[in-house]
Amino acid sequence: MNMVVLVRWNEPYQKLATCDADGGIFVWIQYEGRWSVELVNDRGAQVSDFTWSHDGTQALISYRDGFVLVGSVSGQRHWSSEINLESQITCGIWTPDDQQVLFGTADGQVIVMDCHGRMLAHVLLHESDGILSMSWNYPAFLVEDSSESDTDSDDYSPPQDGPAAYPIPVQNIKPLLTVSFTSGDISLMNNYDDLSPTVIRSGLKEVVAQWCTQGDLLAVAGMERQTQLGDLPNGPLLKSAMVKFYNVRGEHIFTLDTLVQRPIISICWGHRDSRLLMASGPALYVVRVEHRVSSLQLLCQQAIASALREDKDVSKLTLPPRLCSYLSTAFIPTIKPPIPDPNNMRDFVSYPSAGNERLHCTMKRTEDDPEVGGPCYTLYLEYLGGLVPILKGRRISKLRPEFVIMDPRTDGKSDEIYGNSLISTVIDSCNCSDSSDIELSDDWAAKKSPKISQASKSPKLPR
Image (cartoon, rainbow, N blue to C red; front, side):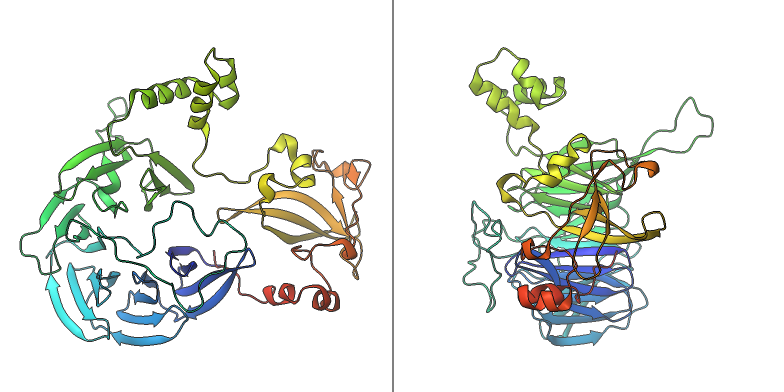
């Protein structure tokens, strides 16, 4: 398994593209509530960038060795080219009309090609700084605006013949090309050949920049050096991550100081530009963004919520029910993972989740235990790319999917393995649902659900 370095979502076609460190590209699609690999492309070279076109029908792939290609959403190659450079390609993007593609290089150049692969221009933007990334203050996809997502239902199926109608949004401002350099400077340009761009001196290192959906607020995250510690002689310079916000004129709006000591590798706007999500190492941070002056009621809500420890403390306040309900909304997390409570694991595995939400799990075989006379298995809950163990057990039949499962309420000591602390649960194959992930025999699977045997042959996501 290889580490995933790029993740790109296709909104019109509801597909997900992932790229690993060795150049493997996987396109995932949701089928019957389960994600499976639809396309695989492995050229054996490291991918520098992957970008979907604004209508979602094409993909632009650029490699660090200078090879670039454009393919369709269904996997057909439209054209490819080998760009001879003394430096590496660091990023690639589409123009807002999808008629041209732009590539940024490590020596500060922008290479322009049309949508058919013909070379149009080479422009040197900076002689001493390389280009980290490029983007437009323009919607990533031209989709219909809807207050409710159509993908919340398990019955949703992506379009097969392309999106129905995706009107171009009306915008009062001309799209700006945003170019981030290794020095931390950011250029706001009307086009790649703009002779007088607006330059933002962010003062940050390892910058990551992204416009909000409306295209009027630019978030720039990076690391800034702080003063040297006074009580530590010859101590190292401390770094902390910061987020700065700018408007379309390059004017500084606000600076958010954080305690994050690792570089921010990615940022993303969400929830109609009311949230900014930041990834740093293994942590994911959520920032609440108010585009207008906050109301007094909201400020009071945040002040009271910060003084309370958890949601249940709201009921202890002498407030009217309406205000208590409003105050409770401050504790609603932006990301709602189905992580079980360790103290209530039995109820989690015994009863369905609220709203009949489908929780995807993975069962892995562990080492054989001679004390129990067979292989042991662990059932994991899939969570944000990781696995959370929830159940342990061993298989007692090679013909039917029957398991002895350990009671999750116990502490799992070795002397209690498969003793009185167990719940001997026999999962009868006749009572299994079609959505079960249990390993079935080929004959039984063919009768009940052919989809199970097909899914087992799908390539696994590299990590």
